[in-house]
Image 1 (cartoon, rainbow, N blue to C red):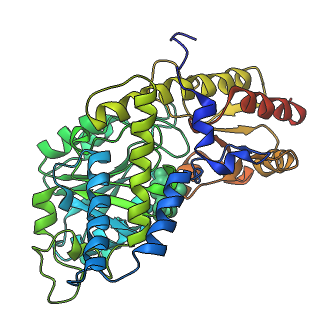
Image 2 (cartoon, rainbow, N blue to C red; image 1 turned 30 degrees about the vertical axis):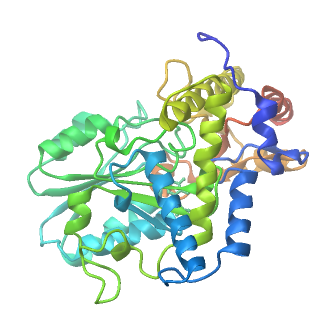
Length: 413
Ligand SMILES: Cc1ncc(COP(=O)(O)O)c(C=O)c1O
């Protein structure tokens, strides 16, 4: 490897995730990660001690309100939001995106253009497509099938003054590629448009920084980041204030973020999410980091990155020895630019066959299109049942990757 080994203490890390005591290898982390004990403990604690409606004058209601507010502040810190009232929470990235595009639809003029990619999960495409009903023209920024990249020159050619929105993914849930969103944000803003970024496949592997991303909207789901089935959407303040309210008629557009949280947030899951930041800070502190909470979290993610790169490189190097294998994404994790989400197909084999073989040995991987159907179609991989996807998290071990490789070797020429 070209870098020093990660200092991550895996036995400490793994002890934080009770599900990892089972005798199986979780390598479907891009589908959903394991949950931290401290997240589950917080959810339980909230339910058993704070289940009252917020906003009343009695002490228990005040305490519960303080807990939910603390949760929003914790999430704001995790994502580096300038103000916590820019943080919209909801059940899933998909539902938050539908809410967002529903709010945006009211301001769409016939002929306004929206650009989506064909590499995104449908969560960041479908809602935008529905804007056609309001008169929008939706154009598709397609992957270059040779380089497997979204070329910035292709986007530049599409960015006219008619474009109001560009929607893209920070990292592809199939290719594993990290996209240069800050660079894209500059181009998009120079054209007078806004950028919406789906960071679901990014947030488990790098410390999110919504300000550094340059995006106007930034969204991801906590169930991929060691937490519950719950999600967050950060919206740049002026934009958020300018959107109409989706809530009751008496909740006006100035009431942020509540106007985009009809029915309110889930209190216990919000409170549980504090455990994610706490864990990241704790890992950083144990690695010797000092300073602000975010500096400690950054230290944790630096260690995750090194470890994940090593795991990914181990699998990629093995796959390169197999003539029948085609890796769908960058062939190496060295030099950055790649998540430890590795997709491949095997010549003359259905992807399902490879995965079903692994099921017998408790190796949890999966096959399919992962709701990035347009990408799978462009690459002509539907006939094979999509790709085989192995997606790692920082708690996976070298032994687990070797166990996977041993069993892959039984089914691949
Ligand atoms: C990249 C990406 N975006 C969006 C989603 C959808 O997230 P949710 O299930 O929270 O709607 C997923 C889920 O797999 C995903 O991988």
